[in-house]
Amino acid sequence: MEQVFTNLRGGGPISVYVRDGLLAGKQGECVRGAKVTLTSKAEQKTLTTETNFLVDFEFKGLVVGDEYTLRAEYNGYLPKEVIVKTDASVNLGELVLTAG
Image 1 (cartoon, rainbow, N blue to C red):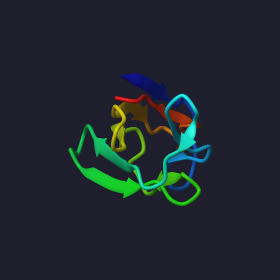
Image 2: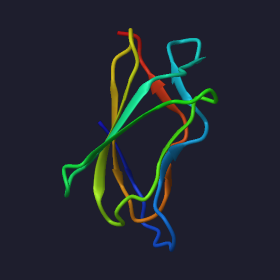
Image 3: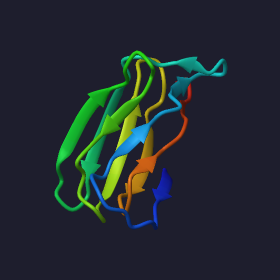
Image 4: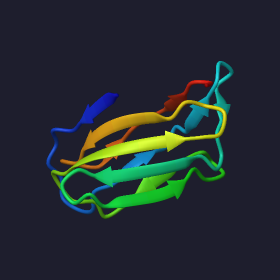
């Protein structure tokens, strides 16, 4: 499992997001409608969304300093999990799923 830790302290709402898209397979196909789940380690609270038509997603209003497990899933591909610590908003960049 990949780990993404931020060390920046910032004001305002905290978000975890992808702006470069969720991609799958060798061809780098865009994955619209992929299920993305974010689970808080401290609160054991789970949020769920799907990638939009731009293949982006975002979770807003997160707890500062908490650790989350982000899981992206799409039919026919292996799920991808990333650990994220929210000391500031986090852009996960490009996530790539592997064919399963």
